[in-house]
Length: 377
Image (cartoon, rainbow, N blue to C red; front, side, top):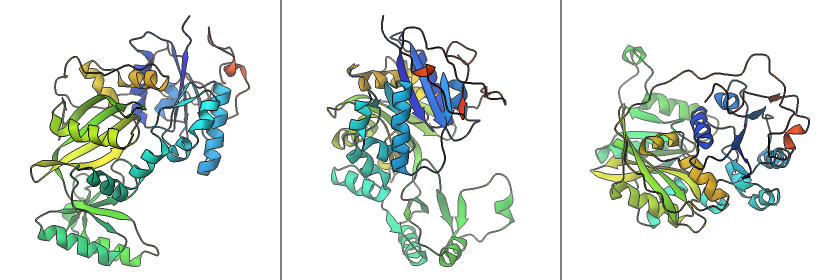
């Protein structure tokens, strides 16, 4: 009998409920048990998991590594997909391997390059991948210089944290004064330059921002699966232009993404994002983790999460090409069940055909959702 695979996702995005669904519906028809941890008891990933726990708050990166190792040993985790404290965790890969756990994450050197967007842009530029003009800004005077230079070049300035994920902290600079027009409709990412400068001058410590031109659509996110031999097994672009989403395998997007993934050893799943500037693609961001929208590749007949788990376990899936490119689509929200208010106790009987890690007493903060065969499927 083929053993069950135990996969752990720590404090991940709500969209990764679909990542979990795809693992269970894998084409190998292999049993998968999913463990999830989070700081929010109402996270849907806790409800979608087979076993789940609330994470302790306030742990340093080093303490979190110890917590993670204990989870892997107690739960018998085969594959760990770390998001929170990824850099600290991958630095201890050998410790996790000794515990019998494979990390579905790049090596520490690759994670370090892309933690800081300035370092990332410099590194990527060195291998010939185009990047937009950028300035690192720490105070009001530096911001004025950057904005004026971008405007001189005919661009609209925007900024975001030099270290950060997703669109958190992204703002577009406007010269228009704040007015009632900005209080109508939905909140806007636009901020008047004078208000930003005033806030910076009042601040007690410097900021760390990347200032660059506002890039044009389409946005293309290339999902890559790369082996430890630095060879890309899968590369598919997901396009976004307003509400419209689609897919591409055009080399203008895939070639620079492969060059980055292979050149910097972005093992396992990564997401490399591009936008347009002056009629050509330029790098926007690199994520050393699975993208929240990775599950959308299922519209192309591809189960990327399962291919990644296979690769992490040493079962190389080989080069994966989508059998077709799905039609254009849009994204809408949908309800997802949560755990009941009264938190049930952990399961005490071990799953059939597995060891007995779940028979151990669970912490008081443990939560137990329905099993993989329940209504969440």
